[in-house]
Length: 442
Image (spheres, rainbow, N blue to C red):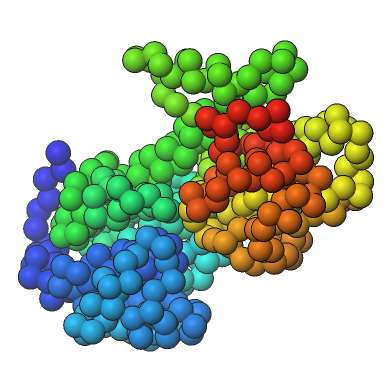
């Protein structure tokens, strides 16, 4: 239930514009969150302006050229051809907009502290052009309090007041890249407002596109919902990873343990180990909460331990690779090692924070002759790793002293990989169902 709101002229006017689709919508940041949202809003009849500092991105969108896997090419092309989408690199368009949705990066710095420079910069650009009657909604993942404590003072500096002159909300993105079942439209949308009026306007806006909207009492609550969701996953993956480390010492197959455990029909959910965690969410988001908790003299022990455990996994993979090679009377130093997969997730072209990058770097530091194959990410340049994917041939497989499966892509013939390779270290259980003494599981 949403709190009762005494209608003001500004609330009524914007709600009416949203209902009749005459509200002009701006989406700041045309990445894996912003572009799918832009397309969904345009599909239901809103005119949407995409704002991005990258002229390459804005140019591609304006031409109907898609670069995000979760967006259907034909959907983007259709809304552009219908005249529902325009793009710009300039914030001068802000006064023409009724709703502005912010979808910019929120990375961590080297000390695992939130870097809100993009949020602050965009908010300042909007504040300089803010007019009465606009809704500003932040979708970027961040720590609880960002909308109220960081954005609100910047937006109110010019004299306009949130909840009276303009509306302010947080609605955290829930994007699972590569998930064909859950899209922007059919994924439940949490919405929190800075105040009751902002909540009503924001819920009205999101209900025009999203199948099910979940209102919560405040923007801070909505921010906490998002970081909890990803912390939940990080902690449970860390538990599976820690079990893997123990099973390795005990000579037990962690995969057999988990397969049997997950047959229990109640009280358990499947989480699997791997070479580490990647993407923007799981490796980073829990640290927003960890950082904010220190302001309250509160130690988030589970979050810290989960992060420590998950960050250990690339080193464990390299250690196990050395043991596999040692069993064949080979040293890691000088051995040819082929990584299969550089993306952080199967059938995806995203390698942000991918554990394969760290494994590649550690193998190089150990003196191995390292290469990788990944048709989804033909080139990588991150965290000091600059490399290009090589073609996956039988000869390449035969020549490698060790093949490490770091990402499970559906377009790889793992049976042939096992058949052609001298030795395989499988960190994703991609060889499930195959029987061979060449394969060592994580």
